[in-house]
Every structure is written in C-alpha cells, then in structure tokens.
Amino acid sequence: MAKVFCIANQKGGVGKTTTTVNLAAGLAKVGQRVLMIDLDPQGNATMGSGVDKRKLEMTVYDVLLESASIAEAKTHAEKCGYDVLGASRDLAGAEVELVGVERREMRLKQALAQAGQDYDFVLIDCPPSLSMLTLNGLCAANGVIVPMQCEYFALEGLTDLVNTIKQVHANLNKDLAIIGLLRVMFDPRITLQQQVSEQLKAHFGDKVFNSVIPRNVRLAEAPSYGLPGVVFDPAAKGSSAYLEFAEEMVQRIKTM
Image (tube, rainbow, N blue to C red; front, side, top):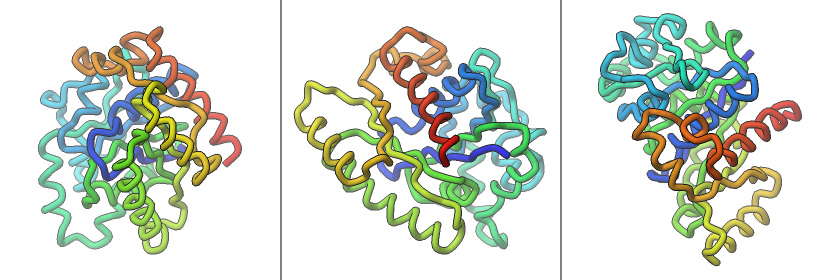
C-alpha cells in the first residue's frame, strides 16, 4: 500500500505547493510510483505539474462527491513522471456540498483505499486554511510533512498546526503524525534564519529533515513554465536539494 503524506502548514506562502510538486517529481526520478493530489481550489499544484486545470474532465471534486474513482479522475503528468488528481475552481463548492454528508471528512480516505496499491507514495497538497478539504487530507494521511521558513512568525504557525494534528490524531485518524519539518527558502546569510533553524533542531530533533531547500530563483521561475523545478532545471541548487529530500524520504519510510 502507498504511504500517504499531506504537505500542510496553516501559514500561507511557505512553499507547500512548490514542495509537493518537486518532491513528487524527485520521487518519480528515483523510481517511485507517485500520485499527487491537489486539494487546493486554486489548482496551483495541478498547473505546476504541466496539467491544464481548465481542460480536466474530472477532478478531485468528483472523487470527493463520489461521482468518480481516483483511477477515472487522475491524469498522467508526462514530463514530470507522476500521476495527478487535479483541482479546479469547482473544488471550492465541495465544502458546501459536503456539509450535510455523514463521515464527510473520510471521503478521500475511502477513495484512496481502492487506489493505494497502485502507488508507492501519495502526496496531498493542502490549502493553507483548516477547511473540510484539509481535514479530508489529514484523515487520509499516514503523516504530515511541514514545509516552513526559518522565521519567527513561522514558529507561531507551527504551534497551531501541531495542535490541529493532535486533535485529528485523537478524534479521527490514529495513524496521523508529523513525519518531519522541511526548512525551505533558507538563506544562510541571515542570522535569524540560522537561529530559528537551530531552535527547530533543538526542539524537534530528528523530526527536522537533514535536507534544506535554499532560496532559489529557478524554483520560483519553474511554475510559469508549468513544471516542477526538478524537471525544469535539474542542475539548479533548489532542484538538487529537492532530489536529496526525495532520497531522504525514501530512506525515512524504510525506518518507519
């Protein structure tokens, strides 16, 4: 069965989508079978995987409303090497349509039960808010990968996320745990970032991934070409760091 991971952080603009698509592409490059699920109505992870959300006949919206299976709704991102269960603007309406449904937070988990054996990894890109969509992701996941900048406000956001994960673990998903914290947009020249990085390592220990993703222009440019940085410019510093992270993830799974 696939290992299912949410890439989540309640703070916006911390590189969740960048991490999701680059980790998916990195895992595909090291020989893993990967499904990337876009749970954000903006559909940035879909577009960043080279898939045009406007042309999708079926999306994760159809899967959540049980009008399609994952096998029917997924599409293959040819250049990236992984499958995509895409999102479009319709997904914003799923929140309202699921309000009166029993066990609505389990829709994604039920759908993955039928498709899990086709993949080694399932990565879920969550919206920045704690919504019904994020809750579906957390209930379906074995663990959470938290991308975070080494800044003061990011530490505050992390506290909120840890509390949310504890609540979901206690009430809805006993398997859920933080797999690790990934330091992103890291600039070693900034003293504060070094200090926060040391604080994270002191407090969370081996929960902090060894891989560090540097601030990198090529990673920022890649989405405008509809590609993850790992595919767009494999030689860039940021791309190399995400490839290292993919290899670290594969090793970490073996010890879980």
